[in-house]
Image 1 (cartoon, helix red, strand yellow):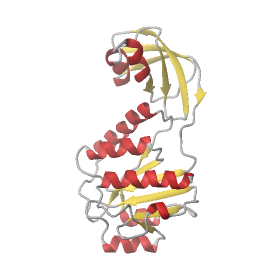
Image 2 (cartoon, one colour; image 1 turned 60 degrees about the vertical axis):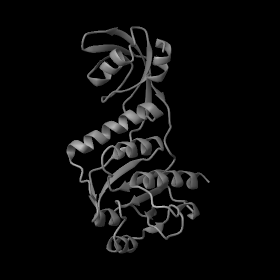
Image 3 (cartoon, rainbow, N blue to C red; image 1 turned 120 degrees about the horizontal axis):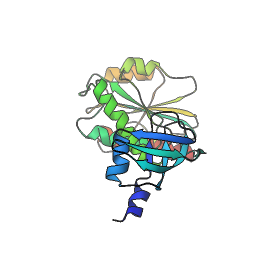
Image 4 (cartoon, helix red, strand yellow; image 1 turned 90 degrees about the vertical axis):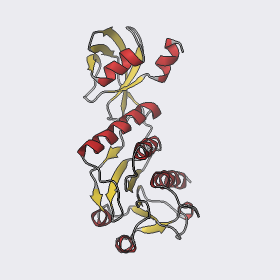
Length: 243
């Protein structure tokens, strides 16, 4: 694979600091990825983003032992976000499935992901786990072209999550035996969707949700894993809202 193809596949890099035209020193994992993995040299043009919604075209000036010196050439507003707020809340699945979940929600344009603490939850994320999830968001954003990072919130217990939110939002609760989500008429500009753990929400949790105005919806006749259900909810909300 030639260097030009590598450049086209790997030209977006995340910088966790304010960006503006002028010189910039890139260090750490992103510098290693640019210089060692992508093998980009002086003169190569790349694009930077920091989550503020802009893209920053840049050129590699020099490569040093532990850093890369860039010249930021300007800033461009590039909007690839959904025109509404979409929040997905779910109990975390085990193992690598949670990485897959976060990556796909990022690609679908989800605004916020909330790890839920439910009665049947099997994964209780600590600070280290949340940091890894945030890194997965960055990597997925680099790949899919998002310039605003999906937010990963701190874990929230079910009752607190149910009573939260804003007036006028739509609240969808994944629950078997309900009307399918594709049959819902979605007009709100703020949508929250919740998915329970393996085994689903308990009867008590469903009653709590109903008391706070959540609408039960089904995702078809088959039993879905957490990550599949969350992705299906997000995709259904996007497609139904567009329609």
